[in-house]
Image (cartoon, rainbow, N blue to C red):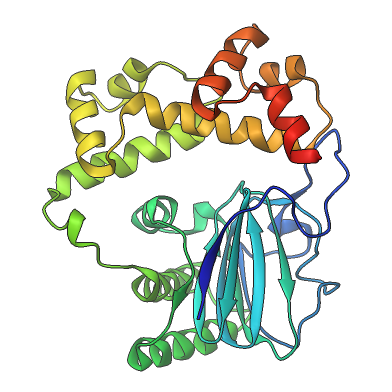
Length: 295
């Protein structure tokens, strides 16, 4: 059974803090904006995965057919066993550990290669391992994986893009959990919420005011707050601070940057202001967080 294990600050194979967090780019080794590969008995030293923490500039979609693996993603630990699906978003810090007998698929795709609606679904779904109990969905996913894996290199860019988007659409259908609590949310509100979250994830380093996000969507702040809180249970300010604090945690834990340097990276000239936001959201000062989680 695949499962979320819990928060994990003491990662397996801790990385010595660096000045910068490694970032992987898909075009370093490939000319296309995606790849699809079948793996079997993959180990931690393979060309695809390294057991060192890093970010990717692309989505990683995992389809596990057999065996098990463990992932650490932004201070959370997940375990996949048997037939399961999972994914990692661009920018998330992660590492992966495979165990004997593993077999499955890895799909990597740049955000710009996906339809906007698929990007928004991947960015806003709750990411927990999902077991593939539905054999019909699993077989459809397998067929799509084989089709995309065998696309001739000479195929047109449009055909490649259409097929990889079809594959991602099937993956999302397999991954998605139908939550009864969201059934009554108007489609327009869901679209606005998805666009708001996309804007925040892209712009939080430069855009900090809730009113600026409302203006970008041509909405009043009160209406945007109503929409965001109805869909997610949280306010506009919460999601802005969520992105800021998560990135601060990444930099505090994985780098040796000073609080002043981290503040500057996050768009604050005054480190004390970032410290207040961080403390209000975590109950710890930035230095206390770093010290506690590196012990």
